[in-house]
Length: 241
Ligand SMILES: C[S@@+](CC[C@H](N)C(=O)[O-])C[C@H]1O[C@@H](n2cnc3c(N)ncnc32)[C@H](O)[C@@H]1O
Image (cartoon, rainbow, N blue to C red):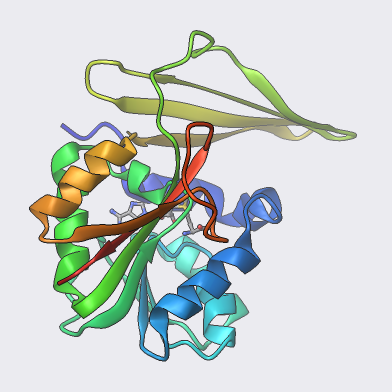
């Protein structure tokens, strides 16, 4: 049963998302790799959010369709660019009635889905939207067992007029996590909830098989560094036969 309304994410995060995420990830590397995968064809981003990748990808001349469940996040994307076609919808069920050269979901966004069933549905929906030979590319941190310090709050940032704290817990039985970022400012406290389900890269391989996709490669970053024992991140590339 769902415990976290996915629409809540965008409703709470949209205003500060770009401020907190700018420079956090390798946006340039991701856009370069995704443009290569598109190879002149169209690209589909699931959970496109405020367009961190969709906008620069479109600026490189790639036709990009971005799907997101949050009108607030998509409104921010539309303020930045009119080049991306935005579709408000659920990435597990949306049907665009066309095929893409590459579909992708970045920055742990598959983890926003609450159940294994929904995550498998995402793989199936990606496969439905790929042309033969097209690729589904996912980027996430490497999922490990819940750490011993889970449940503790950490200090994200201390500024003159704002302190940001974050914390969360993962349920070892279901794999579901519940998290919260909090800001304390002179004019009040704000809460930024997170929720979903972590997936290991091995489980993703199986989800891909269920969707009729085959793993082509796994990188440790967007530059194509081979995935290894110490990798903290993975970019997994699946191909439709
Ligand atoms: C972590 S943000 C990532 C945004 C963007 N891809 C990036 O890398 O900066 C996850 C996004 O997934 C969206 N989302 C959550 N559940 C969704 C669903 N079921 N279908 C489509 N989008 C969803 C949220 O609204 C949010 O914009």
